[in-house]
Amino acid sequence: MVVYLDCAATTPLDPRVRAEVLRYLDDDFGNAGSRTHEYGRRARAAVESARDRIAALTGSSRGDVVFTSGATESNNLTILGLAAQSQSRHIVTTRIEHHAVLEPVAELQRLGFTVTYVDPEPGGWVSSEAVTAALRPDTLLVSVMHVNNETGVRQPIAEIAEALQDHPAYFHTDAAQGFGKDIESLTHPRLDLISISGHKIHAPKGVGALILRRRNGARPPIRPLFHGGGQERGLRPGTLPVHLIAGLGTAAEIANAEWKDRARQCRAYRIQLLEGLAPLHPVLHGDQSRVLPHIVNLSFPGIDAEALMDAWSELVAISDGAACTTQSRQCSHVLGAMALPEERMSGAVRLSWCHTSPLPDLPAMVAAA
Image 1 (tube, rainbow, N blue to C red):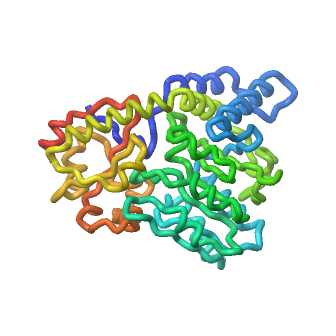
Image 2: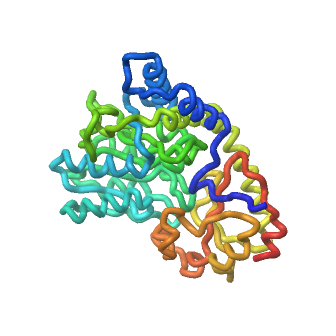
Image 3: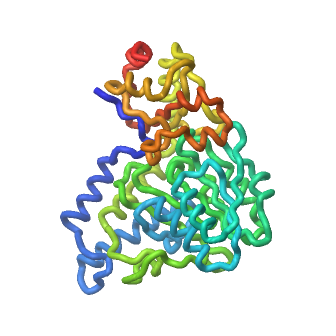
């Protein structure tokens, strides 16, 4: 059996979430915008309950949660939507962001915005000092990811939020990889916008949210990317996918209740995995004191990543980097920004798991490599 170890790309659907999704497909299938009958009212109640469950994970309120198709859309809505409403023309971000942030930022550059890209420390995290040093009086937005999707390294979100207390710039984080796993840092009230994806926490693909917090009584002034219908305060119009939203709400509630146990199980899994691979002398990438317990990015001396994945193809499903960019077959921009030697970048693979992952046949993996 091939063991799935690519949970940083997407997670398996939790059976409890699946049951909730099917309920709103088969039984309570009403349109949440229909207010004249019980089917619509039940659908609306499911949507509002999901808002509460998601808000609880970030110390936000129900009204802060806008549903989207996922973190990529939430990132675009934040970056392009803010830029359309402001005279400020400077953006601060980092060189290790997901392409779902880097590409809309690049589009703003094309339109004449100035962007400062903060370099990471060798351990794969950006310092709050480097971020604040990049600020200018006309900085509109600071966007720093919560947890890096390739290395699993946490970014100092709370420290950056503290450092931004006296600056008007909006602070956004792409929390796709850390939402529901690393809880406390996302509750900082100076964090204005948070992007999340359901399929990273055992909910379905195709649903996520953007959390917009009030500051001094006002939410970030975002212009919608498309129009029609007025749903989600006009920021994301269209009929709400109640089944997906209900599934995301259930997944968030479960994560809130179980994240400590899940983290403990993932740490134990990590220890066993690395002990089993020790004969191959793995070299770990990223500051291991800052990583989430469900991701490891590593290389093995003298072994190329493509050759390794081919050798392991009947044993484990893994990635040689971010799943969204593997078609390019280029070295990771994240590892490049960390200034890793070429041989380590060309040999880098990412193994990621969840609390339900079985251990693969580790002796067979060592022998096959």
